Image (cartoon, rainbow, N blue to C red; front, side):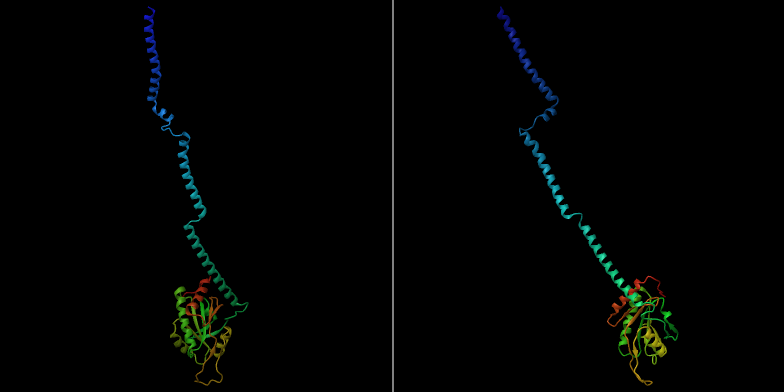
Length: 293
């Protein structure tokens, strides 16, 4: 009788045990199905070594970025704060400064020459004079003021030197006029007043340039103006009327500023371009007014 009662109890106990064992598995499966992302995050997807997997990818990425930064740093260190644009600007600035300093050096040299030639108290070259121009009008040193003047001493019967120098003078006049306008007065003063009358001088200068002004006077007036300009001249002694002769004289162009002060002497060694440059540079340095009429 007792055995009959125990057998059903054992069967019931075995069923209860199987249900209890299955219940946690069902709960686990249910929790996994309800929150699968949490389960996936908490477990590694592959059975790799955790330490190796965790550090391999960050090390590779950070090493690549660090290498790029080091290369950039080295490149910046080699170049410094400069670039090709800065180099070009630096080059142009250097060329400009060099040109400016050369111009200033030449300008200061011209200024020293002009100041030294003025002398102290009395001008070294130039001064009062009284002559007659090729139109028969009175002409003095006051008529030179207001413009730059280029004064040349010669005579109309000169066979070679005077014509050559007057041709150069014509070239200077044109080059100065092209750059600055009518700011210069070219003057030809005869050292041979016995033969060079106003009419003779007027016809003679017309062959060279229309802007040239011819001057003559008495023998004493010519001597005085030559002395004022430190010009040497001489005629042969005992010359008879109508006799042909040559006059020995200094061969220079005398540049005078608008105030009538001597600036510079231009000799035969100057070409037309070189002489015109000297004149144009002095005109460009002038700070006062210049008559351009």
